[in-house]
Length: 134
Ligand SMILES: [Ca+2]
Image (cartoon, rainbow, N blue to C red; front, side, top):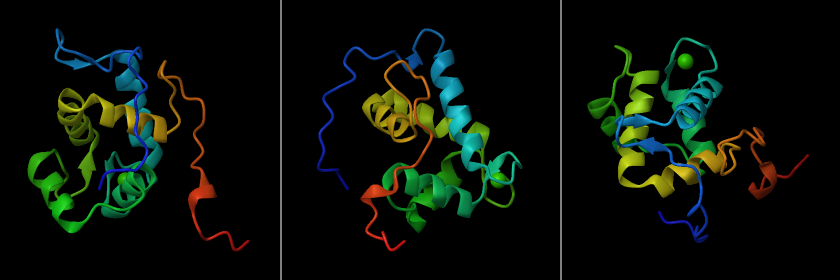
């Protein structure tokens, strides 16, 4: 689903991917690894379904559907139990970043990074949730 907000920024943002090296820039690699470990709650080096759901919700506002999970397991490095490894996570972002860098920028901003790929706010913002019942 496309979001209603349009993103026209980031024209002068840092590069995320070094096409000469065929790999992420060091700053982007560090950011992606930090995000991966942030959601790897039990620290076993892979994102289980529950951890992946938390990641997807923080990134997209909703967990991946079953078809997307299948796609992830089919295309990227996962453990025997089907949890996405760091390598798989990097593979996933390689695919997205080389085709749609704006999408990766959106994700990085969602997770608190600014245009210099500095972590400025690691907090998930709860204000757009309708469950303000505290
Ligand atoms: Ca884990």
